[in-house]
Length: 380
Image (tube, rainbow, N blue to C red; front, side):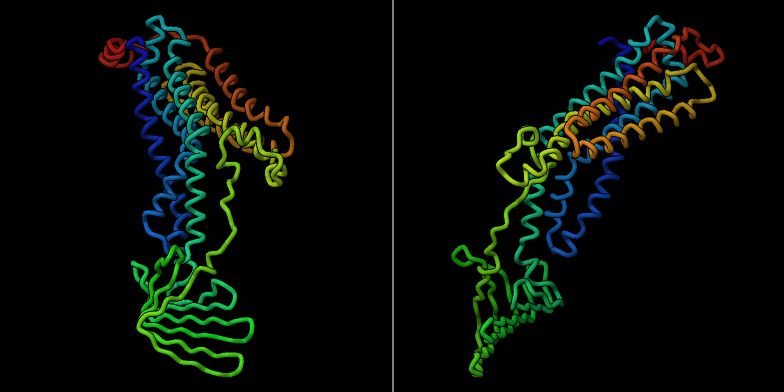
């Protein structure tokens, strides 16, 4: 790679990393706000909250990267053009293709990274995320007791705890069990905690009493120092983790098991998701081409390129929205998936046409400071 190519690549790489970090931070903030329910309502630890937030990053990065690349390219190329460094490149005999080769090379590298994330990292992360959310939803300690509330985790079972500390210890515990035959048992205890005995979850109650009322009208009252309340019937569930199309690998999306009813009914949705995994990395290249068209698609203008940048931004937004619309429409017809590739490729083609239709200017504005021109020439 020549010196000028490395220089142009460096000028683009820094803003791209900064824009990616900034936009990813904003996206993570939005994701973390939606995941606060895990801590507030499900009483999970901060570690579980952080795990859920980080496992959503691959898909967030896939959405952020094209936009970050577009913004960074506009910033870097606008500066290079405003300081006439690109004009120096053209004046030195470089072709337009030679000048845009480093930005396009960076876009292709990022597109390949996005493709790897789509095919391997995202489904692996989302499977782990789905398993984590399943564990949270079926967490017995979180669903059984909520501080200061009467809960009914199962028919005929009412549980109340006045307080629950950070280690899961429950204070002033009350449990009422109503049987179908009319019998009822009430447990009260100063303290309770979750435990496992013989592989079965139990609730260990300390310093309490039981009041058992039989169908015949007999009341039995007992006090205890420690009582083991079996929670096994509450966890006996046949519910399994169900992987959505976003959690599946590419071969599972393109070749589903049609013997399963769900996969047969959602075959078109899975096919649309598979083609979207392959098509979305192309937006990185298309958005870079739009940024190049905004800066190099017209003559040099000392007043700036605000209008062309606005048109490029509108075209980028329109193409991405159209991509989402086409992906949704693909769920009703397999042939529409072809348009998922057409949208970014057409955007790329029109943008590159705008770049190459403009004549290369070999003119350097001598009203600029000589030291700036000398510095640009040394960089070349």
